[in-house]
Image (cartoon, helix red, strand yellow):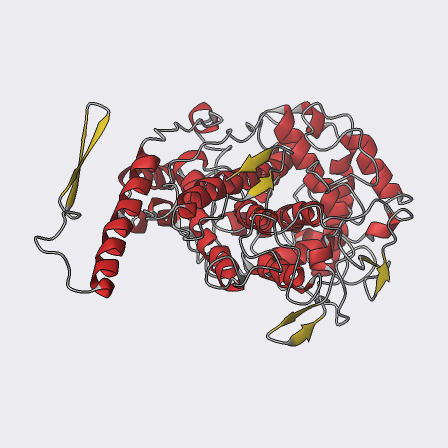
Amino acid sequence: MALATLTAGTTTLVNTACEPPDEEPANSETRRALARRIRSYQLRQQAALNEYNQGIFPKRTNGDEERYPNRIGNYSKGLPHNALGEVEPAAYNALLRAIDTGRFEDFEAIPLGGLVRLFNPMGGLTYDLVGPDAAALSYEPPPALASPEAAAQMAELYWMALCRDIPFTDYPTDPTIAAAIEDLSRYSGYRGPKPITPQNIFRIDYPGVLDGPMVSQFLLQPWQYDGIPIEPRMQVPLPVTTGDGIDFMSSYDEWLAAQRGFPPGTFPGTPQMDPVLRYIHNLRGLGQYAGVDVIFSPYIRAALILLSYGPPFRPPLSERNPYVSASTKQEGFASFGAGHLFTLIGSLTRASHAGFYGKWFVNRYLRPDAFSGRVHNRRRGAADYPIHPELLNSPVLDRIYVHNEQINERRGLNGGRGSYLLPVMMPIGSPPDPAYPGGHGWGAGTRVSLLKAWFREDFVIPNPVKPNRDGTALEPYVPGVDGPPLTVGGELNKLAHNVSAGRDAYGVHYRADNRAGNRLGEDYFIRFLREERATYAESVFQGFVFTRFDGTRVEL
Protein backbone atom coordinates (compact mmCIF):
# COMPACT_ATOMS: atom_id res chain seq x y z
CA MET A 1 0.00 0.00 0.00
CA ALA A 2 1.26 3.52 -0.79
CA LEU A 3 0.97 6.28 1.75
CA ALA A 4 1.42 9.99 0.95
CA THR A 5 2.45 12.12 3.89
CA LEU A 6 1.79 15.80 3.25
CA THR A 7 3.45 18.06 5.81
CA ALA A 8 4.76 21.61 5.87
CA GLY A 9 4.24 22.05 2.15
CA THR A 10 6.37 19.01 1.22
CA THR A 11 5.40 15.67 -0.25
CA THR A 12 7.03 12.44 0.93
CA LEU A 13 6.01 9.27 -0.85
CA VAL A 14 6.32 6.09 1.20
CA ASN A 15 6.12 3.19 -1.25
CA THR A 16 5.40 -0.29 0.02
CA ALA A 17 3.54 -1.57 -3.03
CA CYS A 18 6.49 -1.79 -5.44
CA GLU A 19 8.92 -3.86 -3.44
CA PRO A 20 10.50 -6.69 -5.55
CA PRO A 21 9.47 -10.24 -4.64
CA ASP A 22 11.75 -12.44 -2.58
CA GLU A 23 12.26 -14.78 -5.53
CA GLU A 24 12.56 -14.12 -9.27
CA PRO A 25 9.31 -15.03 -11.08
CA ALA A 26 9.44 -18.39 -12.79
CA ASN A 27 8.54 -17.36 -16.33
CA SER A 28 8.74 -14.37 -18.67
CA GLU A 29 4.99 -13.78 -18.69
CA THR A 30 4.94 -13.42 -14.92
CA ARG A 31 8.01 -11.15 -14.98
CA ARG A 32 6.35 -8.97 -17.60
CA ALA A 33 3.14 -8.81 -15.59
CA LEU A 34 5.07 -7.83 -12.45
CA ALA A 35 6.99 -5.13 -14.31
CA ARG A 36 3.75 -3.68 -15.66
CA ARG A 37 2.16 -3.77 -12.22
CA ILE A 38 5.04 -1.76 -10.77
CA ARG A 39 5.20 0.66 -13.70
CA SER A 40 1.43 1.18 -13.66
CA TYR A 41 1.57 2.10 -9.99
CA GLN A 42 4.49 4.47 -10.54
CA LEU A 43 2.72 6.25 -13.39
CA ARG A 44 -0.42 6.82 -11.32
CA GLN A 45 1.60 7.91 -8.31
CA GLN A 46 3.71 10.34 -10.35
CA ALA A 47 0.65 11.81 -12.08
CA ALA A 48 -0.98 12.51 -8.73
CA LEU A 49 2.23 14.07 -7.41
CA ASN A 50 2.59 16.26 -10.50
CA GLU A 51 -0.96 17.55 -10.07
CA TYR A 52 -0.43 18.17 -6.36
CA ASN A 53 2.73 20.16 -7.09
CA GLN A 54 0.81 22.48 -9.42
CA GLY A 55 -0.34 24.26 -6.27
CA ILE A 56 -3.58 26.03 -5.43
CA PHE A 57 -5.19 28.48 -7.85
CA PRO A 58 -7.48 30.81 -5.87
CA LYS A 59 -10.63 31.86 -7.69
CA ARG A 60 -11.69 35.50 -7.88
CA THR A 61 -15.33 36.52 -8.19
CA ASN A 62 -16.76 39.75 -9.61
CA GLY A 63 -17.92 40.82 -6.13
CA ASP A 64 -21.62 41.10 -6.97
CA GLU A 65 -22.72 38.56 -4.35
CA GLU A 66 -21.20 40.72 -1.59
CA ARG A 67 -22.11 43.99 -3.31
CA TYR A 68 -25.88 43.39 -3.58
CA PRO A 69 -27.67 41.91 -0.54
CA ASN A 70 -30.71 41.18 -2.74
CA ARG A 71 -28.46 38.99 -4.98
CA ILE A 72 -29.56 40.71 -8.20
CA GLY A 73 -26.21 39.92 -9.84
CA ASN A 74 -26.24 36.21 -9.09
CA TYR A 75 -27.93 33.05 -10.24
CA SER A 76 -31.04 32.07 -8.28
CA LYS A 77 -33.34 30.46 -10.84
CA GLY A 78 -35.70 27.81 -9.51
CA LEU A 79 -35.75 29.23 -5.95
CA PRO A 80 -38.67 31.24 -4.51
CA HIS A 81 -38.71 34.87 -5.80
CA ASN A 82 -40.71 38.00 -5.05
CA ALA A 83 -42.69 39.94 -7.63
CA LEU A 84 -39.54 41.68 -8.91
CA GLY A 85 -37.85 38.37 -9.56
CA GLU A 86 -35.51 38.82 -6.59
CA VAL A 87 -34.68 35.63 -4.71
CA GLU A 88 -36.05 35.10 -1.21
CA PRO A 89 -33.09 35.62 1.18
CA ALA A 90 -33.69 32.43 3.18
CA ALA A 91 -33.65 30.33 0.02
CA TYR A 92 -30.41 31.84 -1.24
CA ASN A 93 -28.83 31.41 2.18
CA ALA A 94 -29.80 27.73 2.04
CA LEU A 95 -28.01 27.50 -1.31
CA LEU A 96 -24.90 29.11 0.19
CA ARG A 97 -25.06 26.74 3.14
CA ALA A 98 -25.10 23.74 0.80
CA ILE A 99 -22.25 25.24 -1.22
CA ASP A 100 -20.26 25.59 1.99
CA THR A 101 -20.83 22.09 3.33
CA GLY A 102 -21.03 20.17 0.03
CA ARG A 103 -23.47 17.74 1.66
CA PHE A 104 -26.15 16.05 -0.44
CA GLU A 105 -28.76 16.52 2.26
CA ASP A 106 -28.06 20.26 2.44
CA PHE A 107 -28.65 20.61 -1.30
CA GLU A 108 -31.87 18.65 -0.82
CA ALA A 109 -32.89 21.17 1.87
CA ILE A 110 -32.80 24.13 -0.57
CA PRO A 111 -36.40 25.31 -1.07
CA LEU A 112 -37.55 25.38 -4.67
CA GLY A 113 -40.20 27.67 -6.10
CA GLY A 114 -41.54 25.31 -8.74
CA LEU A 115 -41.10 22.07 -10.62
CA VAL A 116 -37.72 22.78 -12.22
CA ARG A 117 -34.85 21.08 -10.36
CA LEU A 118 -31.34 22.48 -9.93
CA PHE A 119 -28.92 21.09 -12.51
CA ASN A 120 -26.21 18.98 -10.87
CA PRO A 121 -24.63 21.39 -8.36
CA MET A 122 -22.74 18.46 -6.80
CA GLY A 123 -21.12 17.63 -10.14
CA GLY A 124 -18.40 20.16 -9.34
CA LEU A 125 -17.40 18.20 -6.21
CA THR A 126 -16.52 15.00 -8.10
CA TYR A 127 -12.92 13.85 -7.78
CA ASP A 128 -11.03 12.61 -10.84
CA LEU A 129 -8.22 10.06 -11.04
CA VAL A 130 -7.17 11.39 -14.45
CA GLY A 131 -6.34 15.01 -15.28
CA PRO A 132 -6.62 18.09 -13.07
CA ASP A 133 -8.95 18.30 -10.10
CA ALA A 134 -12.20 20.24 -10.52
CA ALA A 135 -10.90 23.06 -8.32
CA ALA A 136 -7.41 23.19 -9.84
CA LEU A 137 -7.99 25.47 -12.84
CA SER A 138 -8.14 29.25 -12.82
CA TYR A 139 -9.92 31.86 -14.97
CA GLU A 140 -10.95 35.48 -14.85
CA PRO A 141 -14.21 36.42 -13.08
CA PRO A 142 -17.26 37.33 -15.19
CA PRO A 143 -18.23 40.97 -15.82
CA ALA A 144 -19.97 42.65 -12.89
CA LEU A 145 -23.64 43.54 -13.24
CA ALA A 146 -23.03 47.31 -13.47
CA SER A 147 -19.96 47.11 -15.73
CA PRO A 148 -19.67 48.38 -19.32
CA GLU A 149 -18.80 44.85 -20.46
CA ALA A 150 -21.98 43.40 -18.96
CA ALA A 151 -23.99 46.11 -20.72
CA ALA A 152 -22.29 45.41 -24.04
CA GLN A 153 -22.75 41.66 -23.95
CA MET A 154 -26.39 42.03 -22.93
CA ALA A 155 -26.95 44.47 -25.81
CA GLU A 156 -25.35 41.91 -28.14
CA LEU A 157 -27.85 39.28 -26.99
CA TYR A 158 -30.77 41.65 -27.60
CA TRP A 159 -29.47 42.29 -31.12
CA MET A 160 -28.92 38.58 -31.73
CA ALA A 161 -32.56 37.99 -30.79
CA LEU A 162 -33.67 40.63 -33.29
CA CYS A 163 -31.40 39.14 -35.98
CA ARG A 164 -32.25 35.44 -35.48
CA ASP A 165 -34.22 35.14 -38.69
CA ILE A 166 -31.91 37.13 -40.97
CA PRO A 167 -30.04 34.83 -43.40
CA PHE A 168 -26.28 35.09 -43.08
CA THR A 169 -26.18 35.83 -46.80
CA ASP A 170 -28.13 39.07 -46.17
CA TYR A 171 -25.83 40.52 -43.52
CA PRO A 172 -24.02 42.95 -45.90
CA THR A 173 -27.29 44.65 -46.88
CA ASP A 174 -29.77 44.08 -44.03
CA PRO A 175 -30.82 47.29 -42.20
CA THR A 176 -31.20 45.54 -38.81
CA ILE A 177 -27.64 44.22 -39.05
CA ALA A 178 -26.51 47.76 -39.93
CA ALA A 179 -28.34 49.12 -36.87
CA ALA A 180 -26.75 46.44 -34.67
CA ILE A 181 -23.28 47.34 -35.94
CA GLU A 182 -23.88 51.05 -35.30
CA ASP A 183 -25.18 50.45 -31.77
CA LEU A 184 -22.63 47.84 -30.62
CA SER A 185 -19.77 49.98 -31.95
CA ARG A 186 -20.44 52.61 -29.29
CA TYR A 187 -20.13 50.26 -26.29
CA SER A 188 -16.91 50.79 -24.36
CA GLY A 189 -17.07 47.24 -22.99
CA TYR A 190 -17.68 45.41 -26.27
CA ARG A 191 -15.22 42.49 -26.55
CA GLY A 192 -15.93 41.27 -30.07
CA PRO A 193 -13.79 41.93 -33.17
CA LYS A 194 -13.38 45.62 -34.04
CA PRO A 195 -14.25 47.51 -36.13
CA ILE A 196 -17.54 45.65 -36.36
CA THR A 197 -18.52 44.67 -39.90
CA PRO A 198 -21.21 42.46 -41.49
CA GLN A 199 -18.53 39.76 -41.84
CA ASN A 200 -17.41 39.68 -38.19
CA ILE A 201 -20.51 40.68 -36.21
CA PHE A 202 -21.46 38.03 -33.62
CA ARG A 203 -18.15 36.20 -34.23
CA ILE A 204 -15.00 35.86 -32.12
CA ASP A 205 -11.44 36.63 -33.19
CA TYR A 206 -9.93 33.14 -33.00
CA PRO A 207 -7.70 32.16 -35.97
CA GLY A 208 -9.89 31.28 -38.94
CA VAL A 209 -13.24 32.16 -37.37
CA LEU A 210 -13.56 35.41 -39.34
CA ASP A 211 -12.86 33.67 -42.66
CA GLY A 212 -15.59 32.51 -45.00
CA PRO A 213 -19.12 31.50 -43.96
CA MET A 214 -20.36 31.99 -40.40
CA VAL A 215 -20.94 28.24 -40.04
CA SER A 216 -18.09 25.71 -39.83
CA GLN A 217 -17.67 23.13 -42.55
CA PHE A 218 -18.03 20.51 -39.82
CA LEU A 219 -21.66 21.57 -39.36
CA LEU A 220 -22.38 21.76 -43.10
CA GLN A 221 -20.60 18.89 -44.85
CA PRO A 222 -22.26 15.46 -45.05
CA TRP A 223 -20.68 12.53 -43.21
CA GLN A 224 -21.23 8.85 -42.56
CA TYR A 225 -22.11 7.16 -39.28
CA ASP A 226 -21.74 3.38 -39.28
CA GLY A 227 -21.79 3.54 -43.06
CA ILE A 228 -25.07 5.46 -43.11
CA PRO A 229 -24.85 8.71 -45.13
CA ILE A 230 -26.07 11.75 -43.18
CA GLU A 231 -26.73 15.22 -44.51
CA PRO A 232 -26.88 17.88 -41.80
CA ARG A 233 -30.24 19.45 -42.47
CA MET A 234 -32.33 19.90 -39.34
CA GLN A 235 -35.71 21.04 -38.12
CA VAL A 236 -35.79 24.51 -36.60
CA PRO A 237 -38.55 26.67 -35.09
CA LEU A 238 -40.53 28.88 -37.43
CA PRO A 239 -39.21 32.43 -37.84
CA VAL A 240 -40.79 35.13 -35.72
CA THR A 241 -40.40 38.10 -38.04
CA THR A 242 -41.42 36.48 -41.33
CA GLY A 243 -43.69 33.64 -40.22
CA ASP A 244 -45.83 32.39 -37.36
CA GLY A 245 -43.01 31.52 -35.00
CA ILE A 246 -42.59 32.54 -31.39
CA ASP A 247 -39.89 33.12 -28.80
CA PHE A 248 -40.22 32.74 -25.03
CA MET A 249 -39.88 35.04 -21.99
CA SER A 250 -41.44 37.95 -23.90
CA SER A 251 -44.13 38.31 -21.20
CA TYR A 252 -43.34 39.33 -17.61
CA ASP A 253 -45.67 36.71 -16.12
CA GLU A 254 -43.93 33.97 -18.09
CA TRP A 255 -40.53 35.39 -17.14
CA LEU A 256 -41.38 35.45 -13.43
CA ALA A 257 -42.75 31.90 -13.56
CA ALA A 258 -39.46 30.80 -15.17
CA GLN A 259 -37.37 32.47 -12.44
CA ARG A 260 -39.45 30.61 -9.86
CA GLY A 261 -38.92 27.33 -11.69
CA PHE A 262 -42.51 27.16 -12.98
CA PRO A 263 -44.72 26.70 -9.92
CA PRO A 264 -47.69 24.31 -10.29
CA GLY A 265 -50.27 25.84 -12.60
CA THR A 266 -47.71 27.57 -14.80
CA PHE A 267 -46.23 25.87 -17.83
CA PRO A 268 -43.47 26.63 -20.34
CA GLY A 269 -44.52 27.15 -23.94
CA THR A 270 -43.87 24.92 -26.93
CA PRO A 271 -41.90 25.99 -30.02
CA GLN A 272 -43.65 25.91 -33.38
CA MET A 273 -41.45 23.97 -35.78
CA ASP A 274 -40.81 24.57 -39.46
CA PRO A 275 -41.74 21.40 -41.41
CA VAL A 276 -38.94 22.07 -43.92
CA LEU A 277 -35.52 20.68 -42.98
CA ARG A 278 -32.77 23.27 -43.47
CA TYR A 279 -29.01 23.69 -43.21
CA ILE A 280 -27.88 26.18 -40.59
CA HIS A 281 -28.23 29.50 -42.41
CA ASN A 282 -29.17 31.99 -39.67
CA LEU A 283 -28.86 32.51 -35.92
CA ARG A 284 -32.10 30.68 -35.24
CA GLY A 285 -30.72 27.56 -36.86
CA LEU A 286 -27.40 27.95 -35.06
CA GLY A 287 -29.22 28.46 -31.75
CA GLN A 288 -31.44 25.46 -32.30
CA TYR A 289 -28.45 23.24 -33.03
CA ALA A 290 -26.66 24.37 -29.87
CA GLY A 291 -29.89 23.88 -27.94
CA VAL A 292 -30.45 20.24 -28.88
CA ASP A 293 -26.95 18.81 -29.47
CA VAL A 294 -25.32 16.34 -27.11
CA ILE A 295 -22.26 18.11 -25.69
CA PHE A 296 -19.77 15.77 -27.42
CA SER A 297 -21.66 15.06 -30.67
CA PRO A 298 -20.29 17.94 -32.84
CA TYR A 299 -16.75 16.65 -32.31
CA ILE A 300 -17.60 13.05 -33.14
CA ARG A 301 -19.07 14.42 -36.36
CA ALA A 302 -15.95 16.53 -37.03
CA ALA A 303 -13.69 13.54 -36.36
CA LEU A 304 -15.65 11.33 -38.77
CA ILE A 305 -15.44 14.01 -41.47
CA LEU A 306 -11.71 14.49 -40.90
CA LEU A 307 -11.06 10.75 -41.01
CA SER A 308 -12.78 10.67 -44.42
CA TYR A 309 -10.40 13.23 -45.96
CA GLY A 310 -7.26 12.41 -47.89
CA PRO A 311 -6.13 9.27 -49.74
CA PRO A 312 -7.66 5.95 -48.65
CA PHE A 313 -6.70 5.04 -45.10
CA ARG A 314 -4.47 8.13 -44.80
CA PRO A 315 -6.47 11.03 -43.35
CA PRO A 316 -4.65 14.31 -42.59
CA LEU A 317 -3.22 13.16 -39.28
CA SER A 318 -0.71 15.20 -37.33
CA GLU A 319 2.86 14.51 -38.38
CA ARG A 320 3.52 13.68 -34.72
CA ASN A 321 1.30 10.60 -34.95
CA PRO A 322 3.70 7.60 -34.84
CA TYR A 323 1.65 5.74 -37.46
CA VAL A 324 1.23 8.59 -39.94
CA SER A 325 3.94 7.41 -42.35
CA ALA A 326 2.85 5.10 -45.16
CA SER A 327 6.07 3.15 -44.64
CA THR A 328 5.20 2.25 -41.07
CA LYS A 329 4.54 -1.47 -40.74
CA GLN A 330 1.92 -0.96 -38.01
CA GLU A 331 -1.48 0.71 -37.94
CA GLY A 332 -2.93 2.55 -34.96
CA PHE A 333 -6.29 1.82 -33.35
CA ALA A 334 -6.31 1.40 -29.56
CA SER A 335 -3.35 3.77 -29.56
CA PHE A 336 -3.17 6.66 -32.02
CA GLY A 337 -6.02 5.36 -34.15
CA ALA A 338 -9.76 5.96 -34.39
CA GLY A 339 -10.46 3.92 -31.26
CA HIS A 340 -8.03 6.07 -29.27
CA LEU A 341 -9.42 9.33 -30.69
CA PHE A 342 -13.04 8.57 -29.87
CA THR A 343 -12.10 7.32 -26.42
CA LEU A 344 -10.45 10.67 -25.73
CA ILE A 345 -13.47 12.59 -27.06
CA GLY A 346 -15.58 10.78 -24.49
CA SER A 347 -13.02 10.96 -21.69
CA LEU A 348 -12.81 14.75 -21.92
CA THR A 349 -16.35 14.94 -20.52
CA ARG A 350 -14.52 14.97 -17.17
CA ALA A 351 -13.87 18.68 -17.77
CA SER A 352 -17.51 19.20 -16.74
CA HIS A 353 -16.43 18.63 -13.13
CA ALA A 354 -14.17 21.70 -13.34
CA GLY A 355 -16.85 23.67 -15.14
CA PHE A 356 -19.56 22.89 -12.64
CA TYR A 357 -17.20 23.75 -9.81
CA GLY A 358 -16.80 27.20 -11.36
CA LYS A 359 -20.52 27.58 -11.96
CA TRP A 360 -21.81 26.61 -8.53
CA PHE A 361 -18.91 26.96 -6.10
CA VAL A 362 -17.28 30.16 -7.38
CA ASN A 363 -19.30 32.47 -9.62
CA ARG A 364 -23.05 31.74 -9.38
CA TYR A 365 -23.47 34.12 -12.32
CA LEU A 366 -26.97 35.09 -13.41
CA ARG A 367 -28.31 33.93 -16.76
CA PRO A 368 -29.23 36.41 -19.54
CA ASP A 369 -32.99 36.00 -19.05
CA ALA A 370 -32.57 37.03 -15.40
CA PHE A 371 -30.38 40.00 -16.40
CA SER A 372 -33.06 41.16 -18.84
CA GLY A 373 -35.58 41.13 -16.01
CA ARG A 374 -33.36 43.62 -14.18
CA VAL A 375 -33.31 45.77 -17.32
CA HIS A 376 -37.09 45.53 -17.72
CA ASN A 377 -37.83 46.51 -14.13
CA ARG A 378 -35.36 49.39 -14.32
CA ARG A 379 -36.84 50.72 -17.57
CA ARG A 380 -40.40 50.58 -16.26
CA GLY A 381 -39.38 52.24 -12.95
CA ALA A 382 -40.13 49.30 -10.68
CA ALA A 383 -36.57 49.10 -9.30
CA ASP A 384 -33.42 51.22 -9.32
CA TYR A 385 -30.97 48.58 -10.50
CA PRO A 386 -27.40 49.62 -11.41
CA ILE A 387 -27.63 48.91 -15.15
CA HIS A 388 -24.95 50.71 -17.14
CA PRO A 389 -26.36 53.74 -19.05
CA GLU A 390 -24.85 52.55 -22.33
CA LEU A 391 -27.46 49.79 -22.28
CA LEU A 392 -30.32 51.76 -20.75
CA ASN A 393 -29.99 54.41 -23.46
CA SER A 394 -29.61 51.95 -26.33
CA PRO A 395 -32.13 51.97 -29.20
CA VAL A 396 -32.13 48.15 -29.03
CA LEU A 397 -34.49 48.24 -26.04
CA ASP A 398 -37.24 50.07 -27.93
CA ARG A 399 -36.84 47.60 -30.79
CA ILE A 400 -37.06 44.68 -28.35
CA TYR A 401 -40.26 46.15 -26.88
CA VAL A 402 -41.89 46.15 -30.32
CA HIS A 403 -40.55 42.66 -31.10
CA ASN A 404 -42.00 41.30 -27.85
CA GLU A 405 -45.26 43.10 -28.53
CA GLN A 406 -45.55 41.12 -31.78
CA ILE A 407 -44.83 37.83 -29.97
CA ASN A 408 -47.25 38.58 -27.11
CA GLU A 409 -50.04 39.45 -29.52
CA ARG A 410 -49.40 36.18 -31.35
CA ARG A 411 -49.34 34.17 -28.11
CA GLY A 412 -52.14 36.04 -26.32
CA LEU A 413 -49.83 37.15 -23.47
CA ASN A 414 -49.44 40.36 -21.47
CA GLY A 415 -52.51 41.95 -23.05
CA GLY A 416 -50.54 42.17 -26.29
CA ARG A 417 -48.15 44.67 -24.76
CA GLY A 418 -44.39 44.50 -25.19
CA SER A 419 -41.57 44.24 -22.66
CA TYR A 420 -37.82 44.86 -22.34
CA LEU A 421 -37.16 41.19 -21.63
CA LEU A 422 -34.79 39.10 -23.72
CA PRO A 423 -36.85 36.85 -26.03
CA VAL A 424 -35.17 33.44 -25.90
CA MET A 425 -35.54 30.17 -27.80
CA MET A 426 -35.48 27.90 -24.74
CA PRO A 427 -39.03 27.31 -23.44
CA ILE A 428 -37.93 27.43 -19.76
CA GLY A 429 -35.86 30.59 -20.33
CA SER A 430 -32.46 29.14 -19.46
CA PRO A 431 -31.01 25.97 -17.93
CA PRO A 432 -31.32 25.69 -14.12
CA ASP A 433 -27.61 26.21 -13.42
CA PRO A 434 -25.40 29.34 -13.33
CA ALA A 435 -24.07 30.84 -16.57
CA TYR A 436 -20.31 31.14 -16.06
CA PRO A 437 -18.26 29.46 -17.42
CA GLY A 438 -20.25 28.13 -20.37
CA GLY A 439 -20.68 24.35 -20.60
CA HIS A 440 -20.72 24.26 -24.40
CA GLY A 441 -17.67 26.52 -24.18
CA TRP A 442 -15.53 24.07 -22.21
CA GLY A 443 -16.94 21.15 -24.21
CA ALA A 444 -15.66 22.92 -27.34
CA GLY A 445 -12.37 23.94 -25.73
CA THR A 446 -11.41 20.39 -24.79
CA ARG A 447 -12.44 18.55 -27.94
CA VAL A 448 -11.42 21.15 -30.51
CA SER A 449 -7.99 21.26 -28.87
CA LEU A 450 -7.81 17.48 -29.17
CA LEU A 451 -8.81 17.53 -32.85
CA LYS A 452 -6.30 20.28 -33.64
CA ALA A 453 -3.59 18.18 -31.99
CA TRP A 454 -4.68 14.98 -33.71
CA PHE A 455 -4.99 16.35 -37.25
CA ARG A 456 -2.99 18.76 -39.42
CA GLU A 457 -4.27 22.24 -38.72
CA ASP A 458 -2.92 23.58 -42.04
CA PHE A 459 -4.75 20.98 -44.17
CA VAL A 460 -7.06 22.79 -46.60
CA ILE A 461 -10.69 21.65 -46.42
CA PRO A 462 -11.65 19.91 -49.70
CA ASN A 463 -14.85 20.89 -51.51
CA PRO A 464 -16.01 23.58 -49.06
CA VAL A 465 -19.66 24.62 -49.10
CA LYS A 466 -21.97 27.37 -47.87
CA PRO A 467 -25.75 27.36 -47.29
CA ASN A 468 -28.01 29.16 -49.72
CA ARG A 469 -30.21 32.02 -48.54
CA ASP A 470 -33.05 29.91 -47.07
CA GLY A 471 -30.94 26.96 -45.97
CA THR A 472 -32.62 24.46 -48.30
CA ALA A 473 -29.42 23.64 -50.21
CA LEU A 474 -25.65 23.97 -50.16
CA GLU A 475 -23.59 25.88 -52.69
CA PRO A 476 -19.85 25.65 -53.44
CA TYR A 477 -17.60 27.98 -51.46
CA VAL A 478 -14.95 29.14 -53.92
CA PRO A 479 -11.62 30.06 -52.27
CA GLY A 480 -10.21 33.27 -53.68
CA VAL A 481 -13.68 34.41 -54.76
CA ASP A 482 -15.84 33.92 -51.68
CA GLY A 483 -12.93 34.32 -49.27
CA PRO A 484 -9.64 32.68 -48.27
CA PRO A 485 -9.06 28.91 -48.28
CA LEU A 486 -10.53 27.18 -45.23
CA THR A 487 -8.21 25.08 -43.11
CA VAL A 488 -8.81 22.33 -40.57
CA GLY A 489 -7.51 24.51 -37.73
CA GLY A 490 -9.63 27.50 -38.69
CA GLU A 491 -12.80 25.48 -39.21
CA LEU A 492 -12.31 23.67 -35.89
CA ASN A 493 -11.97 27.06 -34.18
CA LYS A 494 -15.13 28.09 -36.01
CA LEU A 495 -16.86 24.94 -34.78
CA ALA A 496 -15.94 25.91 -31.21
CA HIS A 497 -17.34 29.38 -31.84
CA ASN A 498 -20.53 28.05 -33.46
CA VAL A 499 -21.33 25.65 -30.65
CA SER A 500 -20.48 28.22 -27.95
CA ALA A 501 -22.06 31.30 -29.54
CA GLY A 502 -25.00 29.18 -30.64
CA ARG A 503 -25.96 29.19 -26.97
CA ASP A 504 -25.93 33.00 -27.12
CA ALA A 505 -28.21 32.88 -30.15
CA TYR A 506 -30.42 30.50 -28.16
CA GLY A 507 -30.56 33.21 -25.47
CA VAL A 508 -28.95 31.39 -22.55
CA HIS A 509 -25.27 32.50 -22.47
CA TYR A 510 -23.07 35.56 -22.91
CA ARG A 511 -19.88 36.17 -24.88
CA ALA A 512 -17.81 36.10 -21.64
CA ASP A 513 -19.20 32.65 -20.77
CA ASN A 514 -17.92 31.34 -24.09
CA ARG A 515 -14.41 32.76 -23.74
CA ALA A 516 -14.06 31.48 -20.19
CA GLY A 517 -15.42 28.06 -21.13
CA ASN A 518 -13.15 27.78 -24.18
CA ARG A 519 -10.11 28.75 -22.09
CA LEU A 520 -11.05 26.35 -19.30
CA GLY A 521 -11.42 23.56 -21.86
CA GLU A 522 -8.02 24.28 -23.39
CA ASP A 523 -6.30 24.37 -20.01
CA TYR A 524 -7.97 21.15 -18.95
CA PHE A 525 -6.99 19.40 -22.19
CA ILE A 526 -3.34 20.44 -21.86
CA ARG A 527 -3.04 19.05 -18.33
CA PHE A 528 -5.04 15.94 -19.23
CA LEU A 529 -2.94 15.06 -22.28
CA ARG A 530 0.41 15.81 -20.64
CA GLU A 531 -0.55 13.31 -17.98
CA GLU A 532 -1.78 10.74 -20.47
CA ARG A 533 1.30 11.01 -22.69
CA ALA A 534 3.38 9.10 -20.15
CA THR A 535 1.14 6.07 -20.65
CA TYR A 536 1.94 5.63 -24.36
CA ALA A 537 4.32 2.82 -25.36
CA GLU A 538 5.33 4.25 -28.75
CA SER A 539 8.93 5.42 -28.11
CA VAL A 540 9.00 7.47 -31.34
CA PHE A 541 6.12 9.68 -30.20
CA GLN A 542 7.42 13.20 -29.50
CA GLY A 543 4.22 14.72 -28.19
CA PHE A 544 1.39 16.56 -29.95
CA VAL A 545 1.40 20.23 -30.94
CA PHE A 546 -1.63 22.47 -31.39
CA THR A 547 -2.56 26.15 -31.66
CA ARG A 548 -4.58 27.70 -28.86
CA PHE A 549 -7.51 30.00 -29.54
CA ASP A 550 -5.27 33.01 -28.87
CA GLY A 551 -2.87 31.90 -31.62
CA THR A 552 -0.05 30.60 -29.40
CA ARG A 553 1.43 27.16 -30.06
CA VAL A 554 1.53 24.51 -27.34
CA GLU A 555 3.71 21.40 -27.40
CA LEU A 556 2.49 18.48 -25.33
